[in-house]
Image (cartoon, rainbow, N blue to C red):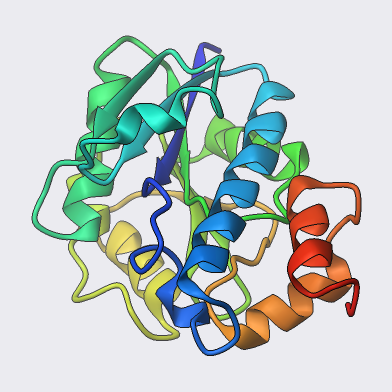
Length: 217
């Protein structure tokens, strides 16, 4: 099967990136942590047999992402009025290049491993939609073999029922849904505290946390 991955990200910027962590980190540290996330993700993507694409929030400095993802086939801006439309457009764009299956992930995933991505592609073998849940009720991964716009027709992407509502929308459209392994993202100070206890100390993220917290992990 000819597979593709999409990394959905911002270009890390102080004051714009990971702002929900500002109670415990400075704007510069938030941006630095996001860069560390991306560097770890790049290594994970390289260990999966799939072509990589990077979909970024429109930014004139998007080329700063190129050194982080040297194996990416293409970089393109996210297009749409909300998150669901942006994800749909990115998936439809890459599937339109002739790939048989596409898996899209977010960028706030320092605990992501190749098995999560492989689990997403495996889920698609007998399903129309692959979903990777997070423990807070959202999802970090979505995969398709054909563009399915109805999946993104939910009201908002906040709260603790995004995964549940997306699965319901898919089933209402007659689609078969299969789950990838759970993997948590990092959005809040509490997420950051858990990450400090779980993160590999030799990863880019682990090294950055050691730096900013002066080894008090």
